[in-house]
Each structure stands twice: as C-alpha cells, then as structure tokens.
Image (tube, rainbow, N blue to C red; front, side, top):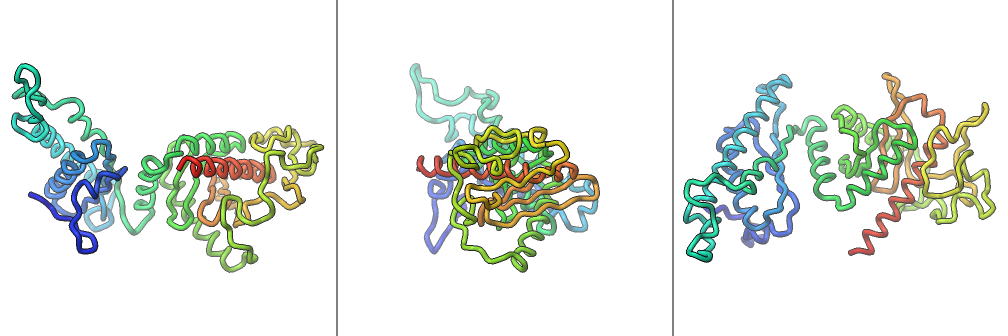
Length: 355
C-alpha cells in the first residue's frame, strides 16, 4: 500500500523526500509491537532505496525508560528483538526483489531472452543481503543523554564531509597534549560533530554535555560582555597569521619554550617544561593571551581526570579529557588549542571555497 506524505498542503513523492537525503533515521517505539514497527520500516526502506540506493539507515529504539526496561539487560533484550525483526523483514524484502516478475528483476530481457534479475529460486544477491548489515541501532530516551549521543553518532558519521580531516586534527591535539579523549561540540544542541579515533564512552559524553551546560550558564551570568563572534576565533584581537605567534624575530614571550615558531605545529607537553619554571600562557602579536574570545574552563574530577572546555566560536567548542596532572601545563594546552582553532578556520575556508 502507498503511504502519503504531505508538507504545507502538498503531497510529497518518494523522489522529493529521499533523493537528496544522506541518512534515514527511523524511530521504533520500544513499547509497541516490534513486528508491526519493523514491517513499516521495511516499507519505508523499500521506497527509499528505490530512489536512493546509497541512503544510510539508522534505527532508534526509543522510549527505553518505562517500567518495562528497569535494567540494562531488559533494554538490550529489546534492542536484540528489534534488530532480529528488522533483519528478518529486510531479508524478506530482498527475497521478494529477486523473485521473477518483481520490480527489481523485471527490467527487461537481455540477450538470449534472459531477464535482468536472479534466476527463479536463487538466493538474494550480496547487494540485497548487505542492506540488513548496513542498519545501525541505538537505544534512546528523552530522559537522559542517549538521544543526543545517538544523533551525534549519525551526524559525525554521515553528515560532516570533513569528518576524516577533523578526526586527524583531534588526534593530533590528543597526542600533543597527552589527552585521553576530545570532542568538537555544537554547544546549542549538545551534539558532537567530530571526535578523535578513540572509542566513545557514554559516560564521557554525558560529562561533556553537563560541562557545556554549566560553563554556558555561568558564563551568561558572570562573563564580561564581548563583541558578537562572527567566525572561528571570535573577537578577542586580530586573527593569527601564518607568520607565527611572535614577531618576525621570534619573540620568545609569544612562543612556548622548545617550540620552533611554526604557528600550525602542535607542541608536545614534554617540550614545554623548563627547570622549575611554570609554563607561560602563550600570547598573540599584541601581547594578549591566546583564546577564542569565548568561554573556557577546566574541571578537576574526583577520579584523577580533568575536563577542559574551550569555546571555538559562538556555536562550536572543544571539550577534552586528560589526566589532572597535565593541567599544570595549561599554557601549552591553550597554545595547542589555538593551533586547532587556526586549522579549523582554514578547513572552513577550504570547504567554503569548494561550494
């Protein structure tokens, strides 16, 4: 049967809905009948894949917060049931597509009178079988951070064309500052758009999201008023140039000790240590401390770890985990965060030029 989708009083066709889509997120009610839900999902996938075969498929098993899901094992059982049901429905869909006379296999007779589909009784093709393997599943709820984490995974994997470049940049930041994990967050939605190559821990994500809330709420009350930020790096002084942070003669006050003066190269923590001297906060050409012009904060946790928040611009912020001992070299961490902002600005300029 055909399902009608309307928008502003006009009916939308599958071509209009799915032709320009990158990912399809289907929400399954965890408290409803999984077989009925998965049958509807198979119908949507069939319509979407006919229009856009490269469409990514995501399933959110939602409402895993009621009385039926009091333990993690119950939630995982629900996910496994939905996953098995989805794979069965998609397998049936692939089998129907390979039967004689179906829309997928009746593309006309080829040379010798053979059809373009599989022979009667043949197993589904590898391309049809792979549809079920391409579906990703997530457990979500509106009463915790799981829904935001699930959307973060979709956005960072599917919707950010520069995700590999951002991942390498964050890996370089983690290596230079001896960090454990780093994220690039959209501060308004609490969704991360990029992270480094290390696996994402749900507890770490929740701490980052809570830290963003705290820093922005406190900053809105106590922060000094600044000009509106219009781009990467904010409005705290002139934007850095390719000439380095100091002057042409290599101003030592503008470059951490052990650094060659290259504005773009991250500095390892070991290179900034000096005999009994505290690391100096790097400064720009006019002597002002480096910063993005927005909020910044560090939080020491009870488990010996620390969290560093650095606002890149009005919409993006870098949130990192590291050992609390490394906060003693905060000046070098700030310098490497500055290098990250410079690289991020250049990446944005390249992406804009390619449009």
